[in-house]
Amino acid sequence: YVSDVLAAGAHPRIPVEVNIVNVVAIQRGAAAPDRRVIIQGHYDSRVTDVLNAVSDAPGASDNASGTAAVLEAARLLTRYTFDGTIVFAALAGEEQGLLGGEIFAEHAVREDWQIEAVLNNDIIGNTRGITGLVENTTARVFAPGIRPDTPEPMLRQMLSMGGELDVPSRQLGRYVVRMADLYMPTLDMQLIYRLDRFGRGSDHTPFFLRGFPAVRISETHEDYTRQHQDLRVENGIAYGDVADAVDFPYATKITALNAASLAALSWAPARPRNVTIRGAVQPHTTLRWDAAPSPNLAGYRIYWRLPTSATWTDSRWVGDVTEFTLENIVIDNYFFGVAAVSRTGNESLVASPLPGG
Image (cartoon, rainbow, N blue to C red; front, side, top):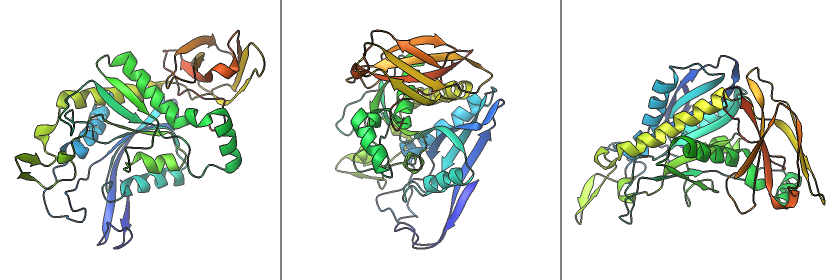
């Protein structure tokens, strides 16, 4: 358990002393146990009044669906041995102000965890939206950009070169999209360049703000009559987050995507470090990087894309080298990155040569 006792009034939504308890299971990696990937979902729920701790609040999609994804991923992945460590976490107090996420992220900082990815699953079970649209072939991955504590010199460099587009959390978002493209033909992931939905939040935020790559995975079409509602029928509309409204096959697809992403990252080498790029006013572009220390390393793949594309569109296997020149590819017309590849073909997150990447 990773927990903390909060005194009454420590947060506007904490009227009495409470123990915020996160349930955490750790599957230690065999070759690189210090490298960690996390899957998490919050297990608390609420009704209309955020301080009502008495009324029934089933929380089927928000967020039993995300918690179930954590449990199912653990059931599947603990059958295998991975190079890196996988952390499975069910978090408390999200509805009261991301409290469990704050406690867990701060624990990771204190323990000096090397976190390569946080997959936060929050509301992944609904396919009927508030507009009446029913659709089960898309989901969203929210990938935040610039952190508010970015030093001004770094911020200026990022804004000059477009580095805000290729920070680690957005590389993680692209990774999830790629896993869906590879393994989930009936699930089209929408990569969203935003911390979360408009004016809302979830437990990936505390990790992102502390410098860890973190994304939120969520259903595309939300039905607000099913979220944060007292159980009731009003004007013929049934309110409440009940299991009857959950699309279980849809939640299964998103859970499978999580498991595939965790497995690939945990079997992959660490991402390359200290990536640099040169090629200004030249016809060619050269990338250079530090070798990724891994006994399972096969080599590296360079990625590039047009500035108008959200995801990587082109790549080239370059082998076990630490410098490569892309001939007749002009630095001004593309974004670039490098991924480390294992002997089994699993890839790390792409590392960008741009400031902040």
